[in-house]
Structure formats: C-alpha cells, structure tokens
Image 1 (tube, rainbow, N blue to C red):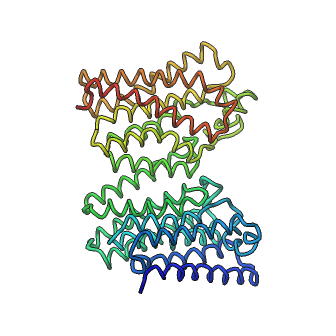
Image 2: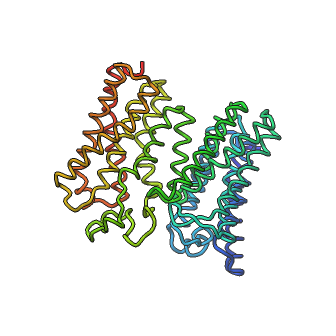
Image 3: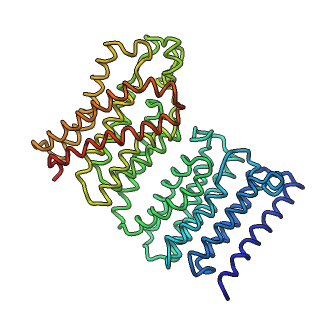
Length: 468
C-alpha cells in the first residue's frame, strides 16, 4: 500500500474526531479542558503509529503542514472559530499548543529514523502525561503554586510525573535492552525533569518542549550505567529540594524556582561541578546583597513604585516573589550559550566567559536593586563599586579554588573583574532609560543580550592562557 494514502486517512480521523467532540460539546456542555484533552489523547495515540504508517519524513512533514494549516484556519476564520474551533479554543487561555503538537511530531519523526522507541516514548508522554496533569489539576487541584502563566496544582504536577514515569518505564522494560534498575532510574529522572519542563512552559509551548526535551533526555540517559543514573537522580532531587526550601528567601516565584532547578541540573549534567558553582552562587547570594529591612527602613512612594520585590513595612515576608521564569532565562541565557559552545567545540576554558556572565548578572541584579531616590548620588556610586567587587569575589573565588590559583588563572580572574566592572557601570548608566521606555519583558531580553555581550570580554582570559 502506498504510504502517501495514509495522509488523508489521518486527516479524516482528525476531522471526524473534532466533529464528534463538537456535537458532544453542544449537547452535554462538558468542561472545555476535558473536550480539548479528549482530542489531544486520541490524536496522540494515532501519531504513535507513524513509524509504521509512513516511510519518509517528507510524508509526515506534509501531513503536519496540512494539520497546522487546518488548525490555524479554525483559529483565525471566525465562522469556524466559533463553531468547530471551540473544541480547541474553549478553554479561554491564549495558546498555540495545537500548532506545536504536529510540529513536534514532525521534528521527532525526523530525529528518530529507525528508532521507533525514541519516537514513541516522547509522544506517549505528550499524549498521556500532559492530559493527566490538566484533567486532574482542573478537577482535583487544591494545592496551587504560581507558574509562568497563572497557577498550577501540585496534584496535577504529581499526576504528570506518574504518567510520565509509566510512559517511560513500561516501554523501556518491554522493548529495550536497559536493565530493570536502569529503566526504573531513567523513568524517575525523566518524570521529574519533564515535570519541571511542563511546570515552566507557557502559551502552549509544553507541546513542543515536552516531546523534544523527553527525546534528548532519553537519548542521553539510556547510555548511562546505574551509578551514573543514581548520581543524577540524587543531584536533581537535591536541587529541587534545596531551592524549594530556599523559596522564601528569593524574589522568584514557584515556577521560576523550578526553572532554576532545571537550569542548575543542566549545567551540572553537561559541564560538571565547576559549571554548577556560578548559577548556584548567584541564586544563593543575590537576595543577601539586595536585602533591605523595610520594617526599619520603610519604602518611600517612589521606591514602592519601582522596587516592587520589596515587601511593605507591614508585610512579614522577606520578599515579594514577583519574578517568573523569564527572569531565570534572562539571567541564565549568556551562561548557557558559553556552556553550549564549550561542549560543542570541546573548549573547557570557556568556563571563564561563562563565569563572567554570571558575575555580570549578579552585579546587574544588585544595581537594579538600587533605590530610585538619589539614584545618581555618591552613596549609590559607592554601592555600585561594592557590588562589583562582591560579585567578582563570589563568582571568581570558587573558580580559582577549582582551577588552581596559578599566575595565569589570577590574571584571567582580573580580566573578569574588568568585565564585571564595565558591565555594572554601563547598566547603572542605562537602567533609568530602560525603566522609562521598556516593558518588563523587553527589559529581560535586553539584559540577556547585554550580559552576553559583556561576557565576551572573558575571552581575554583565554587569550592569557587560562584553563590550558
């Protein structure tokens, strides 16, 4: 049978399922989330068969393109959007998840030629775990936490973890050469990591992040032995537990803390312990450097308008936890770029610009925490100097301990001091303009670009022969 003929078959199944759900929606008035997931699950199950239905990635790409075109028509063409499109859009939140779903299927199919297990497990997670989290959270969620967009429930996240665990564990036991201990550990690690990815995703991007993240994690962890997997599970559990206990001491909301745990695990698992030091130091130290006891030093009206992370004098909390995962991504962006380059080109000495990126970010966070009252005063200028020195010592001190305090290493660290100073002073000068003319989300983007650019000065440390 010509496998191209399976394309109209799949599209007919999609259209028929949507018509049936629309009829049920009109007659029974079910929960919109339930309707959406009853489309999500069957279509996910259908896509599991693609390695056996299609011979070429081009066939899946054509099918995915047609599906995306149809789904976008349902979203944009008002007569259809108010009718059949309500099967997808009735949940009342802004999302392109239905578009990301077929896109992720096409990408996965292209990445897994001749490896159906690496295709099937991520699709199972996407189809079952995501739906389980949404349905359990909607129906039974009581313990809520702040996510990137609104709230999610602990019950929903635990359901996601359990569904992911079994979606990984059972196929590995039945269809792979992994032993029982390895299958159990891989399923637990992936369950936790993909749960973190789901918790921080926004605007439907979980339909892209979950399957692609699951594929990458599965591909890397399948090659590990039991001791390596135990170490990864221990580090991941320690990071999640510690940051969760630390949450009252930061300005990060719950979703941002989970994102920070994910970034920390990634830095450690890819680079090793020296690459975890910088992000962990920043998370631990920035609250201490910008702390202000508002009970003894009440905020002025001008300060309350800008320093919104500071609690009011009547608030017993140390911080107002307003920063979301965008802040985490902004701070981590430059470092992740250097980590990627170091691993891709086997250049471990790139840890110097990597560390500089976090030192500049720590100094920038401290400068951003300055009071707007008397911003250009001599007192604030001395505070900027203090923040530069402390940020440099806190970030480059541990690196020197790991790398060894040789003459070249010390000279390279001094290059880091220059970079930290230039970054902090430049940000001190431009911060008022950013606050006046840019929305918060745009400021996070600018800060990521700014710290990435300044961290390039760390290449001067390599020119001095550091890390060789």
